[in-house]
Length: 462
Image (cartoon, rainbow, N blue to C red):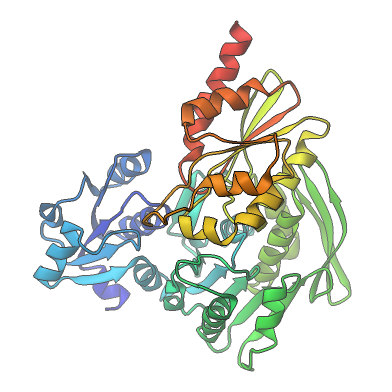
């Protein structure tokens, strides 16, 4: 099936409310494609898609398919889902999320942003900077851009920017013109049991780049250096970024809410990068975006201006508000490296104040693999409250619990508290003016943010 053929079909999504699926549906709707979809629970995302013309169902039933001709299914959906079974019985064309996105990207100059960490932020930065340069790219991102309040858009330009999630290997479907690889580490251990398997899928991703295209690679990551040492292609341009690279980062200055650096290309100063969001990691993400943007023909001054205007993405060190001098931050970090970066950024943000973290481990397999690493990085915080593991689509692994992390830390400032109501009360009780409370994890820990803010407000009122 090609894009023209897809445009004539009625498309049904299972898991329509998910970050990736909703973005694809949004772009299809903008193309005039008939879209329907279902999700287990209602959400503002579904409401928004309904406003755009989608037919939305809450709950899964074979009847939801109606006269649909194509099914797009999220990897999180069980193979015994009644809509999946009905689609198979009817002989519908069934596409994965990645295959559907690849179709939408197929007639554009596509840029896929991959890597273990920083994908959403880097994709968002590149999108905003290209918009600043007047290129109006299409984009599909696994999170909401704060400035635009959306995760997808059908642009008028030839460029299509997409976040490329390696978690199940499906990003091999994209076959992009250009790609970014931010870093490579072991993660998604339910699919990749060791670094060898991770390295193999990223090598295949590099092989999927179109001839005549390019790769932007972050060489401060040992995993990326290892990957590049094995790349044998001479039909793509490889551009590196890092402290000593094609695009070099220097004169780094990190403040509580900002970050600055000088960017040099092959010895020539391109300009000063000034971000309105904190963290060294975001300087690296922005440099990746700058490198790709320049390769796509965007002017350096406008790219730097666009990056300077970037205000962040949802759930990426997102400031949710302050009450009586206590700031509440929400962050999606769920791998030890991400947790470390987030907490180091929080310590800088808090200054002399305490960092209080409510951490919800994501997936039993990841928790089992990284118990000691989580224990080490969580020790950066002043108080740690551990919720139980968020299962996502996994079955429980006997003996695997957040208690393992708590025991590994063996620290009085750490407490395992599975009750989401109790954990809010306890976190608020130790917070004073100047402190930061962080909800951290890729599950539903962010739902605690309104409760935390309300409890802080109640304290002030009393």
